[in-house]
Length: 237
Image 1: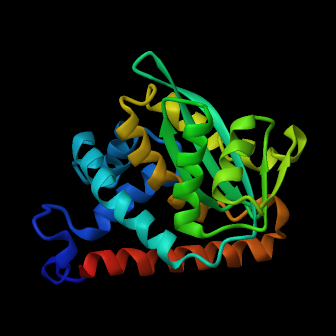
Image 2 (image 1 turned 135 degrees about the vertical axis):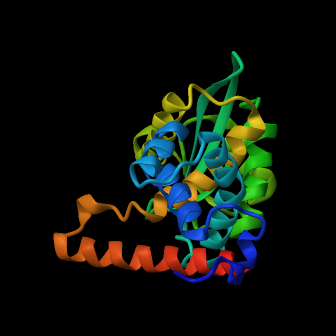
Image 3 (image 1 turned 45 degrees about the horizontal axis):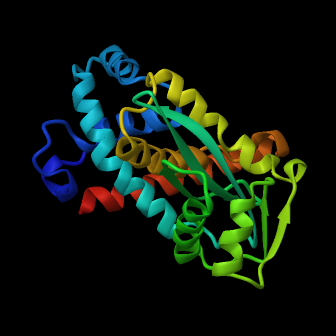
């Protein structure tokens, strides 16, 4: 094992990078709670509290997700936008999410409203990050059309419930994590967690149902190679 002193990105941490990286990967890759990850580590003879795992997830999950976003291939030119309600502290909030035609997560934003101003705020953030697509597909919420007219009047907009399955399916991992976490504690916590979760979780879901076994194994190997490069980059500081 490489000596920990060479990993400047993990300076000040009691545990070596391999343990921290493994804990973060387990938490984001699978639908596990913090205490589940604690038990996984205990089975390996590593005694770490779930609060330590929580700290690692918050700190390094954001860094890993940022690297994945920066190094991902060019996004598709057809975007699917959708919004879903999430409960936070007994109040209704809306999770706005965009994916391309390949199922890659582009952007998300947690907001209190579901109106033209909220749609415009989300689309402005999305287009600042990824440019302007060729086609935008949404459900029948009129707020999207109002925001599009202000931000990109020439953009082709298809508003149809049946065409937006790609975006609606992308909410399923969020629903699973929401149940496991006992709902999100605040809009900021939801935004921070889901921004990292979307990037890391999608990286390890190479649409297996569309691939033959041999191609899936190659895709999985490529994914682990990408993950190893990212973790080494973060560890090197």
